[in-house]
Amino acid sequence: MQEASGLGILDSVANLFGSDEKKDNEIPSMDDAFTGETMQVTVNGKKLEVHKNFYDAMTAYEEYFDKYIEIMQDDDVSVTETLSFLNQYTEMMAALEAIEDADMSKDEDVYYLHVMNSINEKLLAAS
Image (cartoon, rainbow, N blue to C red; front, side, top):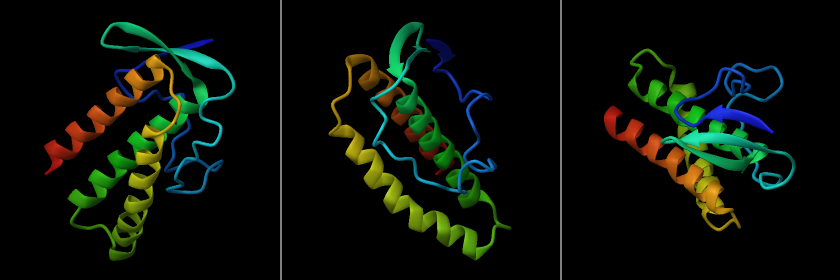
């Protein structure tokens, strides 16, 4: 079992937007999110037990939105890059909505809500 803090994105998680192991801007699959090893994350002082694959997917979603905000606020970003992220936005939202229908544990539900709240706060602050 691994332990991670739910208060930020860990450096140990592969960076979605610079990793040679993943295609840039790849939308994570939830196919294996609720299988495999589990780990502990801490959210608001409470330790939660979540599947590592779920944690990694949620981290990738949050990283996507961090990059999305960065691109939307950058006046020098190329039109191609902006359009690419806008096209992926629809896919990303559909993937996130699909998670809501998944059979999550109580801890995974709490972690999901924590990440979604973080994303929403960032989007609100950027608007």
